View (spheres, rainbow, N blue to C red):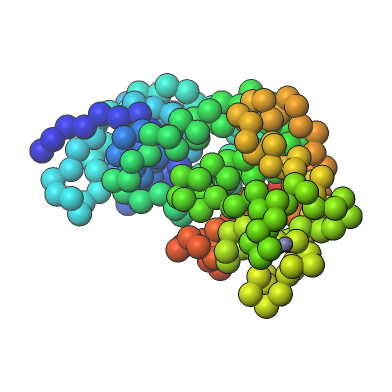
Length: 261
Ligand SMILES: [Zn+2]
């Protein structure tokens, strides 16, 4: 039985039998891992390392590929303690965890996602995301879409191929989730249709969202003061891309998002 060691962030921890825990975590090098922590509920040997959001160093093993990992040791690196003391920050961090639980598979290479999640939780923990929860969620979700090869095509209209940045100020630009891109309002037809409510933005709004998404999150938080309502609508566009293209996200909205006001 091979003994593995990796850094992880706990996504979800559930009681199992009377005293054990089943912990699902995002690891730096082993994808999403599910492990059983025997006597994890009462035992002090894990400290707070198995609490949701905790980053820790794990030693773990398993007998065969189809079994849960068996957690031997967990040493806490960062508890991200402050996240649990503010409902909005808790809701945001929980939405990120929910999203990762739905999309990351076991044994997928996740080093970039691990860094992204760890950086984002640090910012949330520091209070740097307060009142910009939707911006942070959209930024995070966009990075996930890039990671999955599903990032929207921003530069040209899907229909007429002209640059969207040249669109007249008063002409709406419409998000098309099926083709993962945008069309001019006047180019929208049966081919470039959207399910449900049409997601349309003025070019100026779209440009400011585009710039925000292409900055590192720390810079975006300092520079951008976008309108909350625009981020709210953009969040719908991204979640609809997810629902359309990512198995597991369809018909299952992220519950924690509803807590963000
Ligand atoms: Zn067009």
